[in-house]
Amino acid sequence: MINPNKKMSLRLLFVGILSYLSFSASAQTNNPIVQPVINLPRDSIVSAQLIASLDSFLTLKGRPNGENNFVWQNELVETFVLLDEMKEVDKNEKLKDNHFYKPYLMDVVKLNDSIYAVKLSYIGMKENAPLFRASFNLVAHRQYNQFLFSSPLKRNTSTWQTKKMGNCLFHYKHALNNAEAVKYKNTVSFFDKKLQAPEQETEIYCCDDFPEVLETMGIDYSLVYNGYNANTNLGSQTARKKVLLNASAGGGFNYFDPHDLWHDRLHRVASTDSINKPVDEGCAFLYGGSWGMSWKEIQEKFNEKFPNNTDSTDWLKLFDEQYNFGDSEMKRLRMNYFLNALIVQDLEKTKGFAPVLQLLTCGKYEKDNGNYFKMLDKLTGINRANFNKAIAGIINKSRR
Image (tube, rainbow, N blue to C red; front, side, top):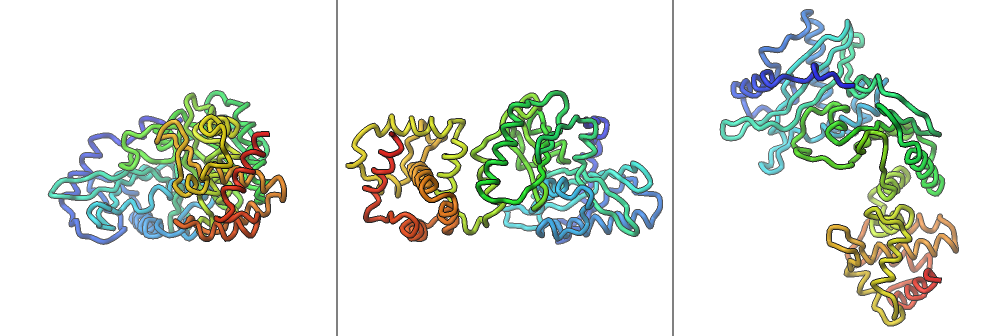
């Protein structure tokens, strides 16, 4: 568990904010600004190495994660989760200033001869008032003449229990929802097999809520998540390993969304530049449902709204307009997503998944759906001219 005694005191935070006033707000640098009250390592060489290494780590944080060679390799993906949240933390989009928030070294604590706990805050100045953007916790590992940095995730969860299921390793504090964990493991396997994706180890950290997700990974505060709490996951991955922090009431992995999981697994094998979103969403409807509804329930809702007259309905118009047959604007069920789900279901049943993947990767959504209809016609013979008749046939077939 996270030791509350390690949290930054309000007094130290206010000292850090007020001391900002003595520095120039125009500095365009990643160099961490060291507060006068900070107790750096007594050895001046070690202290200089720590500051220089932290500067390099922050300079590289905007690049792809794999290019930051100041990340501790033993906890690579665990740190990538935190690094993802640190990207562009310097920017103030409203003021159009890419270097508005400056990094302040708020605390350094020696844990042993080679490991230090580091606290870093990003603060900016507007009209003589400090604006607080974020505060991060890092672990600094001394290696030869430099320091490498990691998220405190492993350290914060060292007393948690673990359970291995296939390629999934679950970390939890008290009790694990075994049924949901098995369902997650099986759904991952099902999607990966369909997509012919290579095996990937996945570690899931089961947190009570989203604030604990942030705290566990090393975020004391982030303006982006101010006041936010929902069953939201944060994670990062390499080809061989994925780390996921799951927010679920009770901290026992009590819920996951197969709809979102489909998107996640597809992105492992296809570039976002090639994925056609309406087809992707159609697959997510088909394989994972939406808004807590299963695919069968979505079909039932569609059939309630359109019980008859499939031959006379202008499906192309509803498709192009992205007509919403859901219960509200918040929980939309877009017609183009639904009809794509029916097309994918029929295409996979008759020709297998390979042509589905071709349709999925026909290119990003275009307003006129030009790339989509070109590929759809090639794979199925369906085009704008015969769309209504073909879709009416697919709908009628799905109701048998």
